[in-house]
Image 1: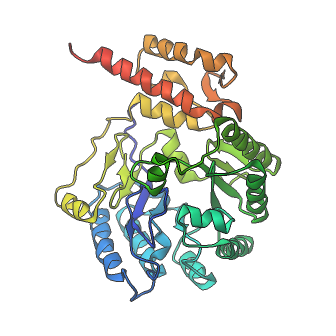
Image 2: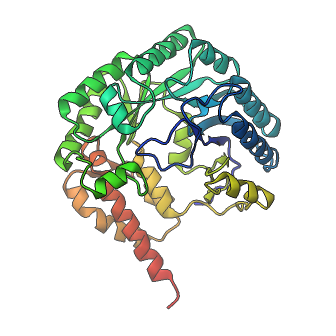
Image 3: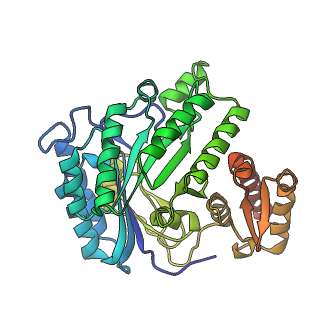
Length: 399
């Protein structure tokens, strides 16, 4: 349903990274392994881009103070702490920041040391998302990552120290599962190390092979031996059971957290609420209608000369609300969608096999993927949503 409430969350995209990982199809600008110093390679490119980002923030419509900010990428930890602080100051001038606002920065192991982490926290960041992906050196090399196991372990130690001291409110560790040649025993070792890190939040993502990536080219040549579906389901179930036993509750398909550590910002996306987006390749939905910016610096610069705007009251389409809603533990209430009763009934008929197989359930009026069975096979349920929406749009199109 349309939501006229102004957004209270903002995403800032920092596209720069050392190198493009073999699975990555994000809007990024690789600068080389020596980037990240004040006068090092790529520093002028970063400064030039930040001018554009500040320009977009300054020209944004006015809104209420922000309750969450997420600085993602790319590798935002290539920014100097002073540059991070300047971005937060720009948001504060334009919107204000609520007391206790959640301010997240993505950081990559081997791009910072303890002193740099302390400086970033002093700049106003209070939550870190650490892009570890694996504790195995061979896997990291296979993924095209720059850091190694020792870098990740050291970064985790610094995060745990900052969190224990109260300097850091929360932090999250990213891992990827369903990797080439992965076994259950190997994944158990990864989970052992993730739990030993002390991270109060874990994001466990399934490998997605995207067009145009190194992994996609390998797959085309049958050089990417991914786990069979039965093993993939077993890996996901093992993740869910082990993390739940350790006190990390699954609140979204890929995210697990201890009480009080669920990402407030990410829940904005999954609830269908609006958010501001700034930067090359960033998507915003301040009034529910998504608006994507150009994925190149040249395109973004030109777009800033005559930016598109979202219209108050448009609302997020029903299929988007369903797709993001089903990712959450709470699920989705079909009565919240801007569709008629007959359309809802047709969707429920499509879902009948999943209901009978115990993958999907209705609880207190909300449709939910069962954990772990339904979440393990969520793509099947999501596909039916896409097909249902295409059928609905086709029926409404003029003949």
